[in-house]
Image 1: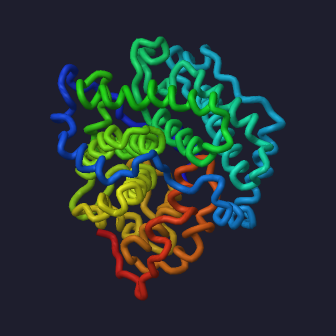
Image 2 (image 1 turned 90 degrees about the vertical axis):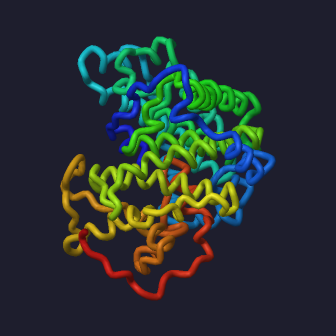
Length: 398
């Protein structure tokens, strides 16, 4: 799974300018909004399962890898929440160093996810107090946009509210926590989460799509930013927005604007960003696709879009020798397709990689502090009852 730290370490070019004063690429058709609103549940519903589903969580709690989360959470209880002072945020604008602030940012997000996951596993209330304190600290940050994506400091000084990779990921993680732990979190904490998601994510996205302001260039970019940010924004909206009509807007926006991401691949599925960004970008496309499939009961199927199967085969086809893959573009030596993602795609597209599927589907997907990963891959999903392919598909480099 993609860790929070790795997510923050990845670069992109998604905050470029778009024309203000008019909808992005014509906006979202009203008829598509109404169409998808009819297919959504009356109340917001998220990925994964709430803490009350002990039939799922107790199984996880007996797994060695998931049990290790309890120890990690206990370690978090022993140390304070990482501080994120203004001078660290301004470090990038003054010296070009982004790592010091991002390390603190990552530590906070990791702490939030681990404490929430541990509480779901243990169900004793031990981690709720520090979890709420961590959520509060994150909600009090001046901006969720990373310094390297706020070069003019417009977000830091409150002149605008934009959405970047970090903001989108934070939103989806926090919304998932709110969904899983709705019966455990205090009413004040839940109101704060809803308020901050509205202010930092939902309203800015709607305004950007409808008016071009704030400027969110990633909405129509063809690189990983499009899929990653859409996944975070839409995933959070489905889990937190009460109105099905309003949620329908976010689904229709995903349906329209994800096409730009797919345009970044060649017809045979080649990813010019390399295997690392295929893991990251197409990995988030997969998270979003499964989320929307579940939310619409199969009516919106990103995996059936022409060309998607070819993209899904990219990692599979790029194997030159057993476990050897080419390093190019922004891909480091030794990069390989993510095992959990590959297992999911094998089952989805009948690749027949039985050993991979048996090891990494379901509980074998393992824990992660980015909870949508756990929700999509570890808890029951649309593939849970789908049998594995009887044959292994032939593959080659193309």
